Length: 107
Length: 415
Image 1: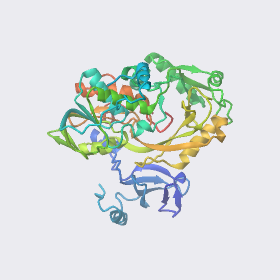
Image 2 (image 1 turned 90 degrees about the horizontal axis):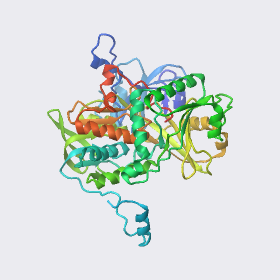
Image 3 (image 1 turned 135 degrees about the vertical axis):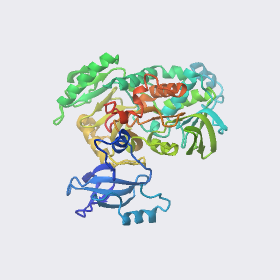
Image 4 (image 1 turned 180 degrees about the vertical axis):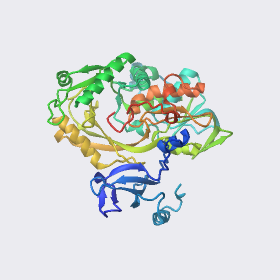
């Protein structure tokens, strides 16, 4: 069972308490952008077999969106962090690099 | 290939079954082929088969990282139906269903197609309206389905509880020619037929890279060495994104786990397939007597072929409510498969940014029923270089154009 710690309220929540929100750190494209940019924002996904940054909502807790770094191949969780950031924080990246030396890094 | 027949059984019975051949050959890869199909699941093998049968292209290799049919082809709940709302979906699934009807004769392999009938229960008024609309659409599409009332549902499925306290059964969308087939046999049968045409089926051979020159694929690197090819077909379901990444393009696909389970075998009690989409569970009885149960998908990216436990509970809770007699049934096995979900939940059968590379993916939670039709359409696309009428609408550029096939064909719900 997947357990994520909510970075806002500190509760270690298991997955029935959470709502998944798929890929995090998407760069948004709206009206006026090219079709290609909009398609990439809307549909194209990294979908990596390995380290994945994703959105979760503590739906049956504080109700807030947060972000998590997780391995889709092993279900290992590297850490969670607040959603008010455009890329993963350095300590999460360092933690992943320590556990996955061949990880190519974020982007 | 020695044909399987009643005479063959009689002949072998008289000589202690010493004369059966291997169903398919397992050759070492040649240095190059006209066509390489990556993925020896149902869709990949069907593509190879119809390339040979319909277009005479037999210098083909089907390469597979694991064993034949060991992915989602061996992990589904074997349901076959074509009662879809939108024309492109109805067309390809009906093509598949009609090919299933005489597939056993066509490939000389008993796929145990059982058109036992399939019910999709309506348990809310919204669903009633939706299924009535589907019945009308199906009539126009030439797909035979009908709307039946709760009494008829009870007659077809005596073990069902139509007066449930939360969601009484208000009727059902009934496709009498829907049903099930033996999933492994579909893969094995196609593999045997492909091998008989001289195609190479290479198992335990993982693709590690795709080499291209000037916008065209020239070959693939594999764990058994480099293999050259004139055309490449990527038919790898859950790992479509990974292989596309090697080829240098991105897909509108995310991989999630879908679960299924079977009960201990019991005496025959239900001879149709029942899908209850509101409470979310679906069930049929296998020839061995096991109740085959389909569960839900998890809502997060996952490549582990195992799903979350609470989805099993949700599925079983729904089914116990619908079929009270199964409440004491023990579950025998549970498993998960990795399904590739697209943005509009409909599949992709498409050309790619690489001129001679084609992709067939995104079948999500509903791929098994489509295998013959998908192979048929993909073979046409690969042979001619342009999609035929079945595949045209399923191109991967529909996401840019906004021309979705707006139907949860591969939604994370009952299939």
